[in-house]
View (cartoon, rainbow over the protein chains, first blue to last red):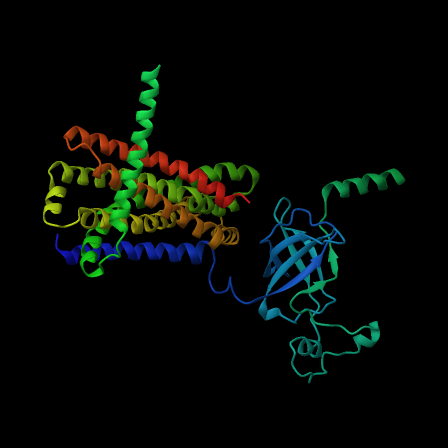
Length: 182
Length: 259
């Protein structure tokens, strides 16, 4: 066999191998640019995380905006703390009055985090990004109404308003307790 | 009594001597930096023999294994209404286990036995000794290119195997049994991690490549230079490398996928 034909066949083999790698990396594992883009970290404390796992999706209105990075126990308060990595395009967009809850997809499905977003006012977003505060438009007098100044959530901040997972045993216990009371 | 002890000692010495000879062979073949100008044509020829010619068996068995996995997985999952999880089931079992292991087993049967028989015959017809007479190191000229060819081909073959098998699973699961194509891919993408699954699978197949090619080359290089010796060495290559692959697979899985 002449060496040209041989080299072509080897080239075909290697090209097929590279194509298989590309298919596995992009189509099967989704390690594309969007998957490993810039992110920032938010934290939230829960009373009970149910069966939430690392890598679970974080959704806003059903659209995935990030993933659960890690779950640990707060050293003093002994409550589970969930670290969330959120796509960097939403950095400083959520106000600190946003809430996060643990939800279940389907009746037996996996658990995921849902953020109920409150959009941060423009002035808070600029302050959070370290820009000069020029805008006053988002400030609709809410701060005076509630008596506190709303902030935008930046890297490492805690979301304080959290709703824990529903645990079936607790629900049944509550139901039986209420039945007994009647 | 003492005869038995002596036999045991003899066997132990024999095993260690074989291990030493095989290590010596590998180090002798790989010690010097490869000479790219002279080595590349040899390597390309071996890549063709070891890699390109294994392509057909790898792709066909990959396609059928993917199809069977999808069929079996579907019949179990549909009972729980969880047939959407077919994608991750197939992809994870292929990338973590079946891809590297089945490729290594097929590779041992298809390419490993051929390597052993070829080198064994070279030894029986004293081609290796004549090379030495011409001041050409047979380790560098014969063993080294074959080792590198196996080392390069097997991970590529394992990747091709997994990719083709996932396409086969898609064929059966989505086109025949009617799993939704969107959830097939998207749940697979959310469950399969690039580092954890694909890279660890590739590390596995690199380890298997070293093990299988090393055993095949050593069995050929060390065989008794008769027709009976060559046939015994070829059989031993397939048996020993299959057992070694399965053993190493357990160790690697225990290290990689338990936390």
